[in-house]
Length: 228
Ligand code: SF4
Image 1 (cartoon, rainbow, N blue to C red):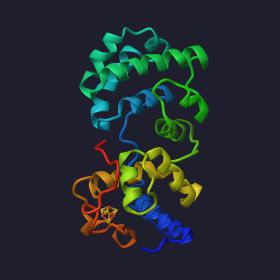
Image 2: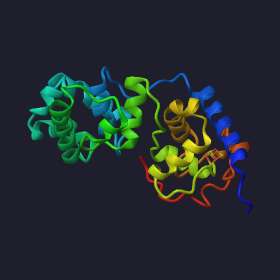
Image 3: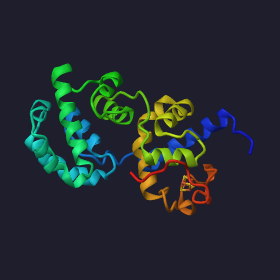
Image 4: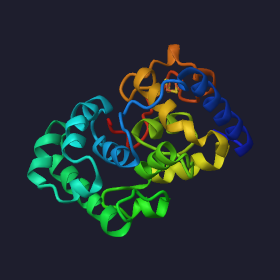
């Protein structure tokens, strides 16, 4: 098949973002948070689980440890007990405590508001940093590519990259910067409702006329797709 010119890809990507904003743009974040610190920890805890599950444990978590200074001195076993239902609780508890300790030691108790600062924290990668920068500080420096965004971008033919991290660079090169901020949240909604990993509903998808995988996504599944 002939390689699609970049200009055509840019036009498709812009139209995809426009339709996703129109359909899902006013739904807001599913994760509940009240500060950069609570958002950072909530996003970290959301790996490999659902936002709804995270919302069930975070009220108690932030009652017990409302600030980084509290969590920094928490007993790891106590944190594990609170976040146990989320899975991977050993690693998540350790990272949450180490994160709070680093915020206290290196950032005077405040969550850093730069990509460099955020990704220097234990357990925080570019995906989480993008979300925190965008939602907590109103800064858009990239696109948070999770498994939903990665799957959809691959099916739409916007990337053939093997990892979400590499796929982000492909998306940044074809989506206008003014639209980066809404991609994560709106595409996740599409992934949950329509373009799921196992059973994409191409027949009712609002992107079907823009998608080279429409009707065949299951016959040629995107590489590296895992359930969130
Ligand atoms: S047409 Fe199908 S594969 Fe393409 S984005 Fe929609 S649901 Fe996903």
